[in-house]
Length: 331
Image 1 (cartoon, rainbow, N blue to C red):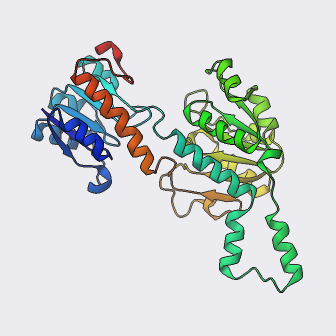
Image 2 (spheres, one colour):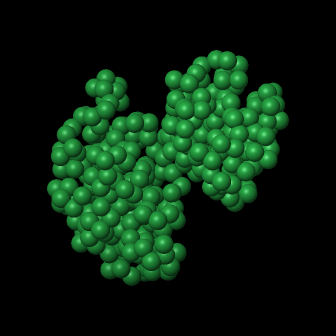
Image 3 (cartoon, rainbow, N blue to C red):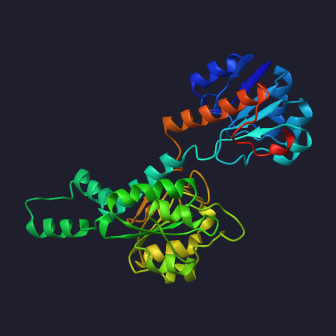
């Protein structure tokens, strides 16, 4: 048996899979290649692959035509780069790694909130640029006034979505003493109660939040859910955090609100183009903290996805039921 792994995968996972056959590890972070379906199909055919584990490569119809696979592993929270319908037609189970990056994204969310609440980034810039002059009292007073923020214990933080990342974020916020409210019609009341989170309507979420953090998937109902009208209903000076998907937000409305001061600031890890283009106007705003989609970029996430996918692939090869399968009807 041959197992091709193009995902970032911990050595422990490679060792686990090596018990079942030859493992060929070609991680995309080292090859620098995101394989299109045709390229991946050629590789799968040339190597006579039986099990394929990917992270960013496209597993579409061409791959299934190139080789009869026993299983596919996708190292993502949802197997969005795998044609699950074709895999199901071909009788190929697709396992994935839900929640693999939940803790890492929640950590970054808290980092954004703290950075904005305490003016960490602009104050760092003033110190390192030499603009902070401790001998000039008036300047010192102005600098300290500009840094004046708020404690998280005094804030109401709203979460749009209470899935894996939202839940991890809520847990962290409760540790800071924040009042946490959330909107998620797909989550049971018992989950809200367990987390100490207050369920509110969508309208109340926007109106009551001092900080609004987005943790929803993109669906027809949530696309551009952060609209100009909903931003207008928010508190003056509220903060917006988006570590989920850019498509949740009306980008022009967000830009206008940040420029006008309607929103006090934003923490953004996702953009319309990724990485964001140098001319993206949001990058030039002083009240925005940006990162280039690094929410899941931790060594811990690699271990989480390795453990989940390798364990489920082993279960399939042993004739057992995997824990996270996108098409269980093929089992």
